[in-house]
Image (cartoon, rainbow, N blue to C red; front, top):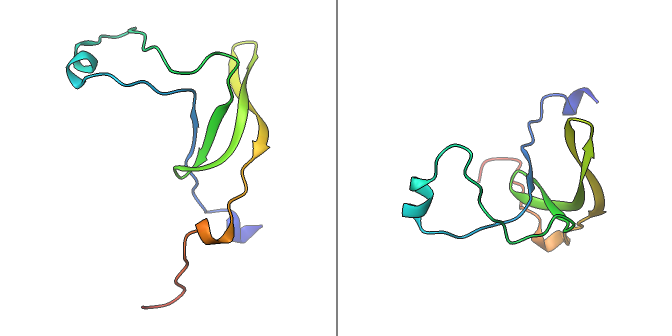
Length: 88
C-alpha cells in the first residue's frame, strides 16, 4: 500500500445547513447556536474532497463523537472527474 501512503483526502461530515444574512452571522458571539435544517435522527452527508461519497448516522461513544456509515454513494462513470496523465 506504499503508493497510497501519501495521498491526502479531506473528509467532512455535514450535519445540516442554515441560511442567514451575513450581518446576523457577524453579530454572533462565542457559544451562539445556529439552528440547522435537519433533525437529530437524520442522516449526515459524508464528503471526500467536497464530493459526496456516503451517508451515515452520528454515534456517541462516551465523550467521543463518530459517524457510522450507513450507505456508500456510487457515482456513475460519467460523473467522475476526467484524468489527464500527461501534458495536454
